[in-house]
Length: 174
Image (tube, rainbow, N blue to C red; front, side):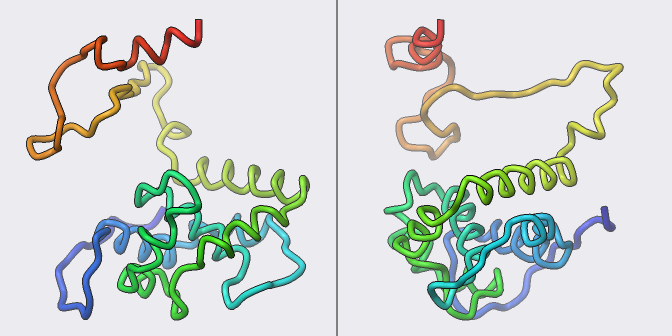
């Protein structure tokens, strides 16, 4: 991987609710992280101003901004034009209907290509392939349903089974 990123503040037109993703967008675009995606997933046609691969990236970004379904893209991701510009999208992000059409049109072969590309990207940027396996790998998993933090509405410290936390979820597994 390249040298450590340099983070600084600069004047910017517009506002965004997802400032960290502006930095992620810059890194992803300049480092070629998504190159395996562009090389592996083959689309034969383009149905809108948004290329199908850009639309898949928009779907990924919608997950990162907290969309629980494709139907939330138009209200959460699409209005953030500043974020779209930072990701190099002169036309903004794709509409939910465009994303749904791309997903619906994908063949089994394209889904497999996408899976392989995502696996390749994970190996490229993930920390576990470089882990010293002579030591244990610690994985911190928070199974609570609420965000933690001093200002998080309804957030509480600790585990409360009556709130339907991890034990309720795990009971269904076994």
